[in-house]
Image 1 (tube, rainbow, N blue to C red):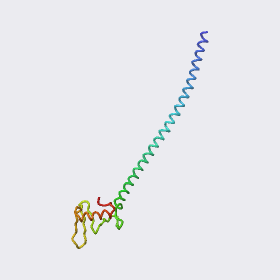
Image 2: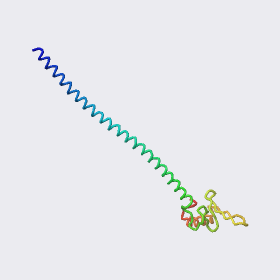
Image 3: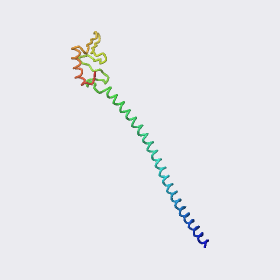
Image 4: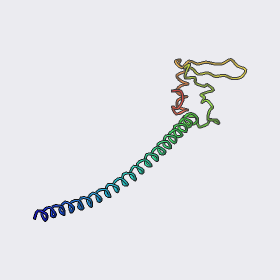
Length: 141
């Protein structure tokens, strides 16, 4: 009888080993699936990061182009008098141009002495008011 009890015990152990082997095989299969998924996800994440980098660089380049064009537009056209034939022509009032740095108006006519009018003089304030009205406040601030 001892042999039949030990035989039963051996069979029981072998059955448990087979069950565990099947379970281990299933767990390993599932682990491989998860690893594959993770690898695919990492590949997708890496590709998404690469594309984000390209998009960020393109956005930065376009923003630089926008800033450059806005600066150019502002420099050449905004506030320029409508009668000006060239975008770089200085606006004039009664033949005077305004020098914001020196805070004065000047008039220079070929063959005549230059005429200077300080901004803080009554004539300068009068010219400045006309200047601002003519240029719509876009120059000399």
